[in-house]
Length: 351
Ligand code: SF4
Image (tube, rainbow, N blue to C red; front, top):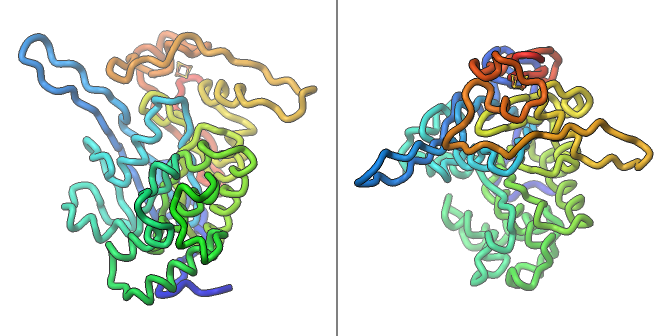
């Protein structure tokens, strides 16, 4: 296998086993540790009338990602998964909390200090066309991070771009083409190559295949897995398509109205979900065999407003199992079973 020009191969495969009992995690030294992360959006002050309550898009979220691991964030639109992911990267400035990469706190760093960490944290966007400059050709797009970070000569950049193209399955002569000349899948491969350019440790994948044809989705997902195996990449994978999530994830965190309500390894979560909201999400996934039937769990009502979330368990207004306690006390995310993949964590008074 060809070596990465100018870049050492990353460490691979997480060690398994959890020491931290307060944050769902795998491995004693996670690559990414997020603790009590909050992002509240405040409305502009008005001269007359009461101030509007803040939108609590993310409200006390804790999780970790190990080296070489894929942790998926799932949930309905508006649950806070994309805001969480962008807050980790500080593309959105979090209101409070802690985000540590390799043990180093990122929140509170100045822009200049943060720049040193940017090369380790990259993102692949949902819409590859919108995320690629139409004025640059493909080679320039992939070389852009190399120009912005580090001290690469033109020859080194050229060699690196050629290598990146080969890694994502693009022909070297495609470097002269412009984004509109590529198919959707090829454009997302370009986005992957750009994210890989600086040899990151963690890539946030924000719905990376949801804008692609179904036939192309599997190719891009398989590419991401191959790259993870080769370079020990960690992915924070934001998605709503549970079939994709099931395929690519090591662990899955389910979000509802700014909270994580369940975290478990992929197989446990899909086989034996504990939180009623997780059950309802999984019940909505079509089964491949039409003879199989799954019990439908119909949620009552709409997702409440994050500007005025229900007290207690935020899911109680829609939960078929809700009791009196659910309206008064917020259930803590606690570990319900232990295994070598971090165990199963649930926030529910009854489960
Ligand atoms: Fe439902 Fe109560 Fe559990 Fe919330 S705490 S998920 S309302 S049973």
